[in-house]
Length: 268
Length: 324
Image 1: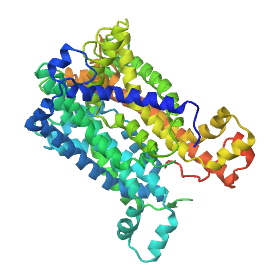
Image 2: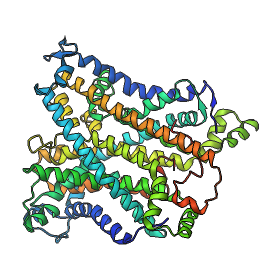
Image 3: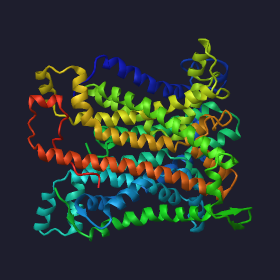
């Protein structure tokens, strides 16, 4: 791959631009509130862990993280398991209405969450799922399932058709072929799709906040409410923010080698 | 590779269809239902026909004025975002290191902002831009600029735009990087033999190869910026005044703030329709691009790059199926 002159400088500047606001958040999370408000310091002069300690010991705080992880995991499992067969179908077969169906799926990925907030509230209240992780997990399916189908379709298309045919000639039944042969072949694709489902479910707030009140409140909602109630506890807010970045950073590390291909939805 | 016609494939698609239909079609029917009615609370509804839609598209009414103003702001915002993020993303992708551990390090750092919950992105910039406790606001005010995103329209806009550039340029960059990585080294060697300039290589080899991923990037960025809600809501709350109130913010205000279900539903439908149309245009362009590539590749199946290839649009080595 050929690059442009001055690339190190450009890259360096851009990475600094990316990291500076994050650094500031981390920096603030280790300061006392007195230091934050009274002086402008580039690093914490009296480092403290008080904010982190409060989050890890106060149930209303740490349960927010558990709730968030719960619906994110449920959503990822649902999305991948329904999207896999569909991706295979879209990749290999032509059937009545396939193009329209694909476009309809795609259009749901693009639908604004704000449109669905209120109807979802009514729907999930009516079927008794309101304020459970299942409500949020199912609601997030509206954009994650189409995305998973889209990504996996790209990866399945990369598997030569001869492999299917050979397997069927060898007497594999369809489910057995699917689990024993196809899934291992596109394992990296499944990883990438799971990463994206995780990511979009983890970062979404509007639906997650609308569909929960007490028991399943996500960390994002805990952050907004506690801050407005207790005045401005900047250090605590910063510490909570830092802790929401960590799961994402961990997940990126696992898929770093596939990340570029994944962002291209498996079709480069 | 032709796909075989097999109607049984519907069974494979059925789970997806059911899940998405449950969470898309049912709620949408509710929205359509509400959009034709008016409510004065207490679950009493009155038939209003197309009244809300008429009001919505008439700038002289309160609802129409608010909708069209926020739509205008949102379109302007999306265009500015695209104009900055797409070229910047390409430049960043071209600046990626070639090999070694720095590649992984750059990729992980680039992807980091994408995985931060949107309200935390808002929080980060809310803090970062504050003149009293934020580095950015503090520095700007100390070098003599009167910067305050809470009270000044232009500062609020700049903050929201810079925040979005910070948040999403990486997506464009990663997509372009994936496109660039798929270019075989032989193309560059051919270009070198031809004595092609840096700019010629970019125009004749790299840009055509990035076409497809760029299209995805533009589509995703347009859609996501068109329905942006959380980040500006956290930073500016739609203010000062209404200056950063985008369509989603306006919609949530009407739906969950005022509980004006009829108005909100009508707005939702029009909003959705706009997105559907734009989406359809992109989809058609994308599918056609896929078909064209296939046809072109069939005409010219030779995979070996000829020296002259470098100065012509390059045919795809491995033709991929269209999106569908």
